Length: 356
Image (cartoon, rainbow, N blue to C red; front, side, top):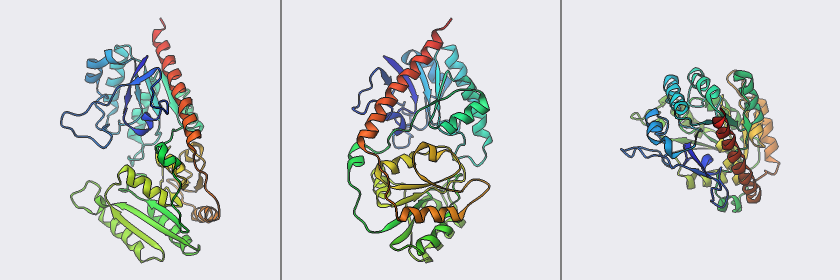
C-alpha cells in the first residue's frame, strides 16, 4: 500500500485518478486537512494545509509520497523551498503534476514561474497532461514529465444521460469573475456578429454577480457595464448570477451547443473535459495546449493577437456538425489506466528514495 499526501485530495481531478469502482487499489490518499476556522471552498481543499513545512514535520509518518497538483497560487518561492527542504529532510519523494505552465489567475507570468523553478527541479517524478507541456518542461528545465491524460470531470450518471432536446444552436461564453487570463470582449464582439448570421443561433453570456458588487474583490464596474450592453444586440442573452453549484454547472453546460473559452493565456482545462463528458462542443484558443488535451475546435487567440475570422469560421463549422461525446466505457477504461500509471509513478519515486 502506497500512502499519498495529495494536494488537494478532494479536487475532482485527483479523486478521479483512482479506479472507477471507487477502489483505491494499492494507493490510498490522505484526506485534506480542514482549517480550524472551517474556512474552505466547496470540496474542502482551500487553503491547502498540507503545503506547510510544519504540517509535513508533524505528519510525515502518515504518508510515503507527497504529490502536488493545485493550491499554491499564494505561496512564495521561499516558502516552497522550505516545503521542498522539509520533504527532503524527512526522506519523502515529491511528485508534481504540472497542470499550469502559466497561472490563469496571475496577470504576470513571473511569480508562477519562480515557484515552478523550485518545484520542477526538486520533484522526484513529474507528470503533465499533454506532449506540448512536456516539451516545454524539457526545454525550460531539462526534465522529463510523464504524459497522463485528464480524467473525466462529470460523474457516470450524467455522462450516460441523453442531452436535452433542443433545435437551438446556443453559443455560450462564461466570463466567470473575469480572472486574469480572460479577455472576453473581442470574442463577444465577433460572436455577436456570427450568431446574427446563423439560423437558430443565439449567444448566451454568463457572468458572476460579484463583479457588480462594490464590496467584492472582483468588483469591475466598467467591465460589468460593458457586458450588460450586449443585451442590446440581436439574439444575445446576458445572465448575471452567483457561482453555479456543480449540478447547476452541468445543467448549464448541457444546455449549450458550443462553449467558447475566452482565454488569452493558459495551459490545460478541466472545463474542456466537462464539456466532452456532456457532449458540448468547445472552441478553445490557440494559446496553451487545449487541443492536445482533448479533441476540440480552436481559434487564434493569445496575448499578442486575436483572429476573429478563425472564430467565425469555427463556429459556423460547428453549426453544421455533430459533436463528439465521451462514453462511460471510454472514461472508465481511461481511469483504470490512470490509476495504474500513478501507482507506477509512485513506485518509481519511492525506488529513487531507496537508492544509496
